[in-house]
Length: 138
Image (cartoon, rainbow, N blue to C red; front, side, top):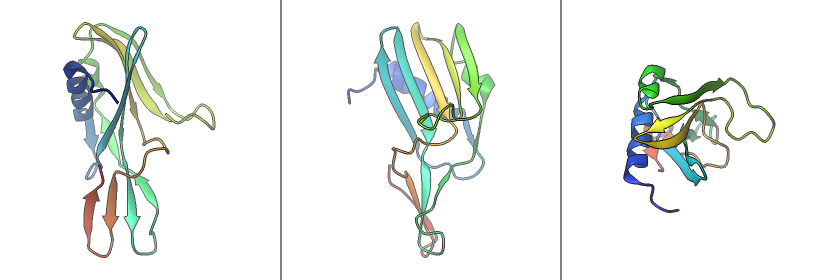
């Protein structure tokens, strides 16, 4: 994948900073692509997979809140702003998310912050029950 422009990487980090963890937030993933009228950026906290014990292999999403005021301040103007409360179809890999479309530093961008990582991404953290430690995979 091509390196994102510096402004886009900075925006992704600023969006991730709007994610307020309820506990120890798992690593944050970012998927981006250039589209004909701008950029699309998808941000999500990775899943944590349990290693050992009776829950071995189970995965859990990181609990976080999203600071919507700080998020919207990254855009001027905002063209669209919405919350998708549930998955729209069985193949909707984005699932519940907040999306915002607007300009950031003169570039048109759509940013989505997902409630949980898409299934196609491997766990970003492992919780080792026997050693009582968290290991980040990415």
